[in-house]
Image (cartoon, rainbow, N blue to C red; front, side):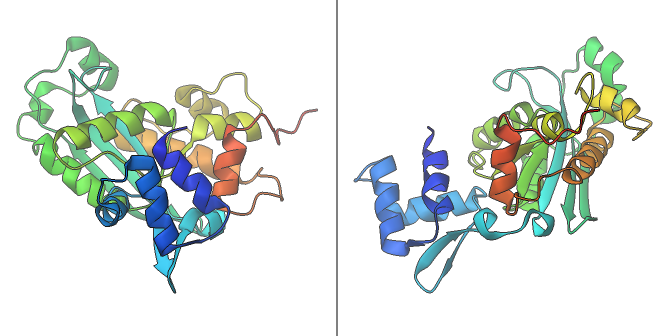
Length: 255
């Protein structure tokens, strides 16, 4: 289990005294590390924790999922591997209490854009020539994201790619909780396939554009909304929802 997940597991069981939490950080990261600095670092990286009366709490363990702030994200890139390619477009939507509360959308400057990416997305090198630099857009995105739950269709790709690029430009890896709409849809929606384009059509979402960041984020949001309608009544908190999405349980209605 990764270190951040171990921290989450400790806090999911209930609040932890601040001093005990610092000891947990020491045990995970090494006794010679500055535990106070580690604490502030994981908060800055987006882990949803807060203090109250000397105890450290995990927000997502006590927040009902309907009241949770989600950030639905999609990115377009000029390659599949973060170490030798970059983000060329980010689209993100803040969502809480059944409503869109904010949005983020931007192209990102690059010198290189393979033809197959243009054919897939419709984005041209001319679209990106005068776009903001990657570091600036990543900084803006991280500020926009805050400690919201990071949601994406195939979340591992978008989350890890952005986390790697943030770390690369000195902004640190992400520590936000994350939720995958593919996983959630498989447990709540009956469908032959769960790719975003297929769900867009089969569920009647009908977003007119695909393989563009904001449009795909919007489609993923619609999938999230439809999935939340079929969540078992036993699921209460955001952490319940995340656990359910990864489990083998299903609430798909079959005929």
